[in-house]
Length: 288
Image (tube, rainbow, N blue to C red; front, side):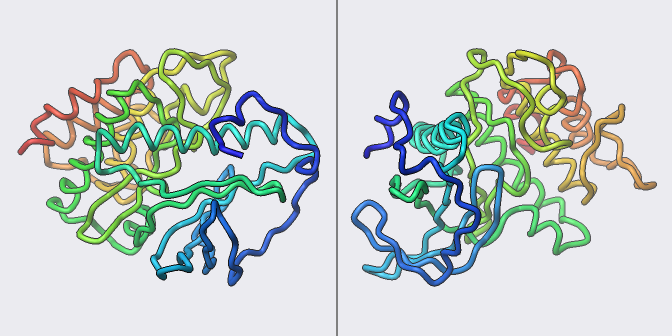
């Protein structure tokens, strides 16, 4: 079944059971007329797991996200299906505007209640990259930051709120190219009311702190971009304690006044006081 037709259809009865454990390592599966051999699991998130794999026909390396649509509750199954569909649709739109969005190669729904999204395989995520270092060179930090600002502009141009931007969702490719993955909970700005989602500290306070029917705007992601920059600057996780741009654990405030200004303006608890992605793109820290 083509996924774009799934939105208004009930989950088939045979999918309405709960898959407790699925071991895919070493298995070869047919995904939309192509065979893929699964290697190791790369990570696990709220909506599924990601595996390194190879296309059987030519050995090309890929990443495959596996999402379980099976559930004892139809509502959860539909939620997981929506997550898969959202990721495909958002990626298709965003890759037209930025080269820093992971490409989706293929997708399929399986009768076992699993969905598969085949995508580019990177080297590692930004969190792993940072955890291997005691500090990040200023030039390396700025090189990554400029790419993040490009992603921010792409999301803003499509009025998309990602809601869960964090180092684990930013994938590093050869040459230091950074791409955004995991678009499963992204939503259209201004048109979606939501409960709590995202990842504490990296997601904006209005995303993680439950307030009934909160309408999110692109300002939510601006906090997240500042939080990632904070992580790259101080090599520690951000926080919600004002002033939020100050480092903890007896570290000194950065001497780079432009960098400090970006952190000071983005890590603000009130979304109305945060700058826009366009402001980030024009800021001296990004351009000098």
